[in-house]
Length: 418
Image (cartoon, rainbow, N blue to C red; front, side):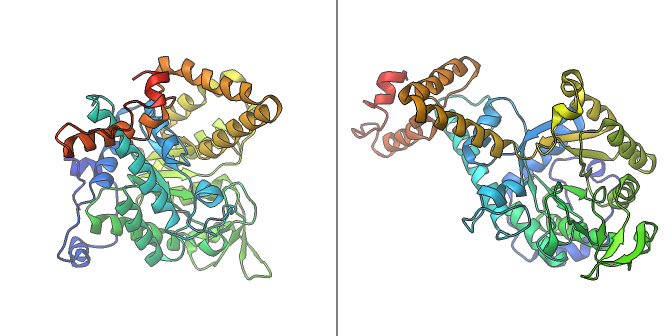
């Protein structure tokens, strides 16, 4: 169960596995595939979590967004299941966040983001620029695992094969899965969620990758439980049942704390989904988990579902993430940043274009020119997509005498500079 980054004892400190090394070896087979992007990403993500005050990330919806995030200075990327459902799934439909899309859609988007980052690395290296570390680790949403432990095992493997550095699972019933900010959430028993996490960890060990595993609980707002079979859930049972046969439970912070403590030995980070950006609530959760697991890292969803200004003034918003970091919330992310930035920007452009024609588009182009002094390069879209890189390929295969180079003589070169 090598960690892939040279510090095995520190990496696995406090982590429990309900299986043996012999069982991992038995399941590996005789051909050991090297998952380079996942292994490097996991090692880099873990290092960032240990050394940085906190690791901020935005949810990417497209490969281009991932590239711009890295170019702008972010060192990690979040991949949201909500965004996959809404606009990036392999069914080609628009869905709410209820696990309605094909389960391989998340891994496919991980692959797409990594491919875009790899291309950016190749483009810049071909131009002699190797300063930027383009392969920012991707933390991907596995929702509730799309089924039982076997489904979680296979989904984790697929995420690793696509190059995910970290993956999170939540304690909802997969067949009733809802966005953390929707109603009607149904939890699985605590011991069932632990099996999901164990299955995910086993998959990573079988793949030989130290994937960062994040456990999320929705117990703060979920009032339903599939079964009353686990004694760990007994304190929160109300004795009532729904027409579907679910047990009603008392949602709230105490329930979330109990789940957080239960999953802490099985996960690298613990995340409780919240309904508001409440620092006191976050502190109470962190203190309760750290009372039993002092070194456990935490994650926090700085959600766009919150009306931030309704809850916090400008000063509290500005200091919000640093205050969270001081409590141990080392991975902090805006889940739906890609969805909101893409839609707001396109609506703004389309609204202006419908009223003013090209004047509106030229304003966008002028804004791109203004961003260039900060490192933005997508104004030259042909180069951004790799035309220059493939010109280098053409030169290489023609002995340096190709007469069909794409950028040479292009309007981009003539009007935007080299």
